[in-house]
Image: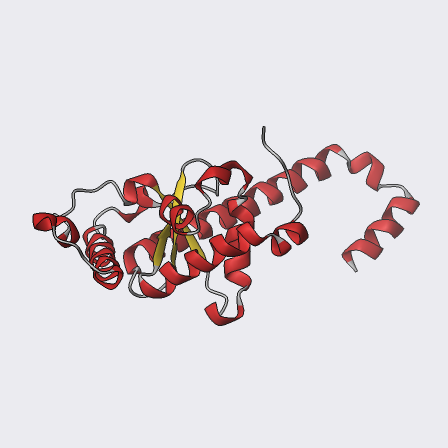
Length: 192
Protein backbone atom coordinates (compact mmCIF):
# COMPACT_ATOMS: atom_id res chain seq x y z
CA UNK A 1 0.00 0.00 0.00
CA UNK A 2 1.40 3.35 -1.03
CA UNK A 3 1.76 5.92 1.71
CA UNK A 4 2.04 9.64 1.17
CA UNK A 5 4.19 11.95 3.23
CA UNK A 6 4.79 15.67 3.25
CA UNK A 7 8.10 17.17 2.20
CA UNK A 8 8.67 18.49 5.73
CA UNK A 9 8.30 14.91 7.05
CA UNK A 10 10.69 13.55 4.42
CA UNK A 11 13.31 16.11 5.48
CA UNK A 12 13.26 14.62 8.99
CA UNK A 13 13.08 10.98 7.85
CA UNK A 14 16.30 9.06 8.49
CA UNK A 15 15.75 6.75 5.51
CA UNK A 16 15.26 9.65 3.09
CA UNK A 17 18.38 11.37 4.49
CA UNK A 18 20.42 8.15 4.06
CA UNK A 19 19.26 7.81 0.44
CA UNK A 20 20.12 11.47 -0.22
CA UNK A 21 23.60 10.98 1.30
CA UNK A 22 24.34 7.96 -0.93
CA UNK A 23 22.96 9.71 -4.01
CA UNK A 24 25.14 12.78 -3.35
CA UNK A 25 28.20 10.53 -3.00
CA UNK A 26 27.57 9.05 -6.45
CA UNK A 27 26.81 12.47 -7.95
CA UNK A 28 30.06 13.90 -6.60
CA UNK A 29 32.12 10.89 -7.72
CA UNK A 30 30.50 9.96 -11.02
CA UNK A 31 27.97 12.67 -11.97
CA UNK A 32 25.00 10.26 -12.06
CA UNK A 33 23.25 7.90 -9.67
CA UNK A 34 21.07 4.87 -10.19
CA UNK A 35 18.13 4.42 -7.83
CA UNK A 36 18.69 0.70 -7.27
CA UNK A 37 22.38 1.23 -6.45
CA UNK A 38 21.59 4.07 -4.04
CA UNK A 39 18.90 2.01 -2.30
CA UNK A 40 21.27 -0.95 -1.93
CA UNK A 41 24.06 1.24 -0.51
CA UNK A 42 21.62 2.93 1.91
CA UNK A 43 20.22 -0.48 2.90
CA UNK A 44 16.74 0.75 1.97
CA UNK A 45 15.69 -1.89 -0.57
CA UNK A 46 12.93 -3.18 1.71
CA UNK A 47 11.19 0.21 1.86
CA UNK A 48 11.45 1.13 -1.82
CA UNK A 49 7.74 2.09 -1.98
CA UNK A 50 8.17 4.45 0.96
CA UNK A 51 10.83 6.53 -0.82
CA UNK A 52 9.47 9.58 -2.61
CA UNK A 53 11.96 10.25 -5.46
CA UNK A 54 10.54 13.67 -6.22
CA UNK A 55 11.41 14.65 -2.63
CA UNK A 56 14.85 13.01 -2.95
CA UNK A 57 15.54 15.05 -6.10
CA UNK A 58 14.38 18.24 -4.38
CA UNK A 59 16.49 17.54 -1.28
CA UNK A 60 19.59 16.99 -3.42
CA UNK A 61 18.99 20.15 -5.45
CA UNK A 62 18.58 22.15 -2.24
CA UNK A 63 21.64 20.61 -0.56
CA UNK A 64 24.17 23.35 0.27
CA UNK A 65 27.36 21.56 -0.70
CA UNK A 66 25.96 20.51 -4.07
CA UNK A 67 25.64 24.12 -5.17
CA UNK A 68 22.00 23.70 -6.22
CA UNK A 69 22.62 21.60 -9.33
CA UNK A 70 19.78 20.69 -11.65
CA UNK A 71 19.22 16.95 -12.04
CA UNK A 72 18.26 15.14 -15.25
CA UNK A 73 15.91 12.15 -14.86
CA UNK A 74 17.54 9.19 -16.64
CA UNK A 75 15.71 6.20 -18.10
CA UNK A 76 16.67 2.56 -17.52
CA UNK A 77 18.15 2.48 -21.04
CA UNK A 78 20.98 4.69 -19.76
CA UNK A 79 22.31 1.67 -17.86
CA UNK A 80 21.23 -1.04 -20.33
CA UNK A 81 23.84 -0.41 -23.04
CA UNK A 82 26.54 -3.00 -23.78
CA UNK A 83 29.45 -2.63 -21.38
CA UNK A 84 32.97 -3.87 -21.27
CA UNK A 85 33.67 -6.64 -18.79
CA UNK A 86 34.01 -5.32 -15.26
CA UNK A 87 37.57 -5.32 -13.97
CA UNK A 88 36.25 -6.18 -10.52
CA UNK A 89 34.82 -9.51 -11.64
CA UNK A 90 37.80 -10.69 -13.68
CA UNK A 91 39.46 -13.93 -12.65
CA UNK A 92 37.47 -14.22 -9.40
CA UNK A 93 39.86 -11.91 -7.51
CA UNK A 94 38.90 -10.01 -4.39
CA UNK A 95 38.88 -6.25 -4.85
CA UNK A 96 38.72 -3.37 -2.41
CA UNK A 97 35.78 -1.00 -2.23
CA UNK A 98 37.96 1.73 -3.78
CA UNK A 99 38.74 -0.49 -6.79
CA UNK A 100 35.05 -1.32 -7.24
CA UNK A 101 34.13 2.39 -7.06
CA UNK A 102 36.89 3.36 -9.52
CA UNK A 103 35.65 0.72 -11.98
CA UNK A 104 32.05 1.94 -11.63
CA UNK A 105 33.15 5.54 -12.23
CA UNK A 106 35.11 4.55 -15.34
CA UNK A 107 32.13 2.61 -16.75
CA UNK A 108 29.73 5.50 -16.21
CA UNK A 109 32.11 8.00 -17.84
CA UNK A 110 32.50 5.71 -20.87
CA UNK A 111 28.72 5.28 -21.05
CA UNK A 112 28.08 9.05 -20.98
CA UNK A 113 30.46 9.63 -23.89
CA UNK A 114 28.97 6.76 -25.91
CA UNK A 115 25.48 8.31 -25.72
CA UNK A 116 26.23 11.50 -27.66
CA UNK A 117 24.57 10.24 -30.88
CA UNK A 118 21.00 10.04 -29.56
CA UNK A 119 20.93 11.46 -26.02
CA UNK A 120 17.16 12.07 -25.92
CA UNK A 121 16.32 8.38 -25.60
CA UNK A 122 18.13 8.18 -22.26
CA UNK A 123 16.12 10.98 -20.62
CA UNK A 124 13.08 9.90 -18.61
CA UNK A 125 9.91 11.94 -18.26
CA UNK A 126 9.14 12.93 -14.68
CA UNK A 127 10.18 11.08 -11.52
CA UNK A 128 8.04 7.94 -11.71
CA UNK A 129 8.56 4.31 -12.62
CA UNK A 130 10.42 5.00 -15.86
CA UNK A 131 13.10 7.04 -14.07
CA UNK A 132 15.95 4.72 -13.08
CA UNK A 133 18.27 7.43 -11.78
CA UNK A 134 19.47 11.01 -12.15
CA UNK A 135 22.45 12.83 -13.59
CA UNK A 136 23.87 16.31 -13.13
CA UNK A 137 23.66 18.97 -15.80
CA UNK A 138 27.38 19.47 -16.36
CA UNK A 139 29.79 19.74 -19.26
CA UNK A 140 30.76 16.09 -18.65
CA UNK A 141 27.17 15.08 -19.44
CA UNK A 142 27.17 17.51 -22.39
CA UNK A 143 24.96 15.86 -25.00
CA UNK A 144 22.43 14.58 -22.46
CA UNK A 145 22.38 17.95 -20.67
CA UNK A 146 21.74 19.84 -23.91
CA UNK A 147 18.98 17.42 -24.96
CA UNK A 148 17.31 17.78 -21.55
CA UNK A 149 17.47 21.59 -21.63
CA UNK A 150 16.10 21.63 -25.19
CA UNK A 151 13.22 19.40 -24.09
CA UNK A 152 12.46 21.69 -21.11
CA UNK A 153 12.54 24.72 -23.43
CA UNK A 154 10.11 23.07 -25.89
CA UNK A 155 7.72 22.28 -23.04
CA UNK A 156 7.90 25.89 -21.82
CA UNK A 157 7.28 27.30 -25.31
CA UNK A 158 4.39 24.87 -25.84
CA UNK A 159 2.86 25.84 -22.49
CA UNK A 160 3.14 29.52 -23.36
CA UNK A 161 1.46 28.99 -26.76
CA UNK A 162 -1.34 26.96 -25.16
CA UNK A 163 -1.90 29.69 -22.56
CA UNK A 164 -2.08 32.42 -25.22
CA UNK A 165 -4.55 30.36 -27.28
CA UNK A 166 -6.69 29.71 -24.19
CA UNK A 167 -6.74 33.44 -23.39
CA UNK A 168 -7.77 34.30 -26.98
CA UNK A 169 -10.56 31.71 -26.88
CA UNK A 170 -11.76 32.90 -23.48
CA UNK A 171 -11.69 36.53 -24.60
CA UNK A 172 -13.68 35.71 -27.73
CA UNK A 173 -16.36 33.81 -25.79
CA UNK A 174 -16.51 36.25 -22.90
CA UNK A 175 -16.59 39.52 -24.87
CA UNK A 176 -20.21 40.15 -23.81
CA UNK A 177 -19.28 39.84 -20.15
CA UNK A 178 -16.27 42.15 -20.52
CA UNK A 179 -18.34 45.01 -21.91
CA UNK A 180 -19.94 45.85 -18.55
CA UNK A 181 -18.45 48.76 -16.52
CA UNK A 182 -17.76 46.52 -13.48
CA UNK A 183 -15.82 44.03 -15.58
CA UNK A 184 -13.77 46.82 -17.17
CA UNK A 185 -12.78 48.11 -13.70
CA UNK A 186 -11.73 44.63 -12.55
CA UNK A 187 -9.86 44.02 -15.77
CA UNK A 188 -8.05 47.35 -15.40
CA UNK A 189 -6.90 46.33 -11.90
CA UNK A 190 -5.62 42.97 -13.12
CA UNK A 191 -3.87 44.31 -16.22
CA UNK A 192 -2.56 47.31 -14.27
